[in-house]
Image (tube, rainbow, N blue to C red; front, side):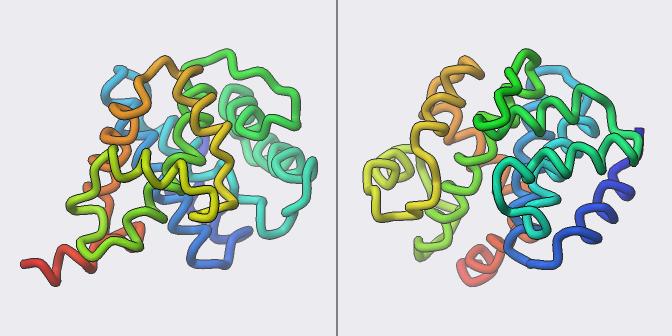
Length: 191
């Protein structure tokens, strides 16, 4: 299987936008943290998180994303498990989420993006963000309206994690990767 460096090169080949690259790094960080917690393969989980939307800029319309990306991943030597997890993160593909990897990606993708959005509007960013604030923002349909709330709730249920604990876990993982995902600046101002 290609390593993390090859995955990053593939992401950069297909994704030029800074915000989508930061999202990829954020989901990578959260997926690696969950792999550590669950005793899974951190590199595989991280790569899956990083590459789940790598084709989105080139193929933004369903079902091209992620179907065309899956073809590219197959050509580049990525496993069927990774490809199925990425296909399963989009409900419209009809690919079931049968592995912890697939359920983890689905549970982390939308919610990680939402947590980042919450952090970006707070004076202290990610550093004092708590699950109760994120849950409150989830009820505000006007905030980060492109985030599919149904997928957030469904993802936590499928992954069999309490939503509040899941949010807290994602926040902690993002704190550890704050500089890479564009959330580190506020901490520097606080120090």
